[in-house]
Image (cartoon, rainbow, N blue to C red):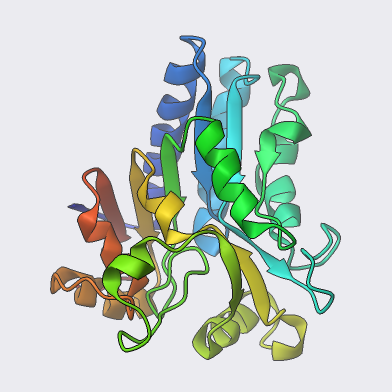
Length: 257
């Protein structure tokens, strides 16, 4: 696994947007289907805006592009929250990327995919049948989670079992809820759903290329634990150490390693 240090958030956003642009356009220009796994969160906002501008300026058709988001919140009824929910990740993607794309590029709503709380495992099959993920973008939870694969005590699950986890429903960890409330809901825990549906570790780790981005001071702790080299379900991001084409990119000005 490679570690890449960049100066700041702006540099990281520009660099990853350019990389994503290359992954997408080099594939579709050759007539290939390109499957991209996308993440949400504050970290991704600027790079999505840059990516949309680059794609619009290129004028390259996107009919061969498919996107697969990592997760979505689940309401008390056991279903995905509505796209009108203020914290919906579908709403986030519409606002930060999808709605910014020029309609003339041909990217349609049926090319945007999210896990479904009513049939989580169906997501893995859908991705597999489509040819698997060419690229997966990841953020990093302050507790070391990737997607919403939360830490699990080693006494409850082995590393191999954790790596095989399918897409599934999850009760969100207390630190995850507190963090998301602070960053996205005005510190009001009542506004943050307690459950989510997430892409499983199995599908994430099968992606041909993975980039994990870190730009918060609180992410230094899980990153330093990853550097120790121990793979454990108590630190989900540590499983990237098993991947042959994974990179961690962090901002030098905020993440002190």
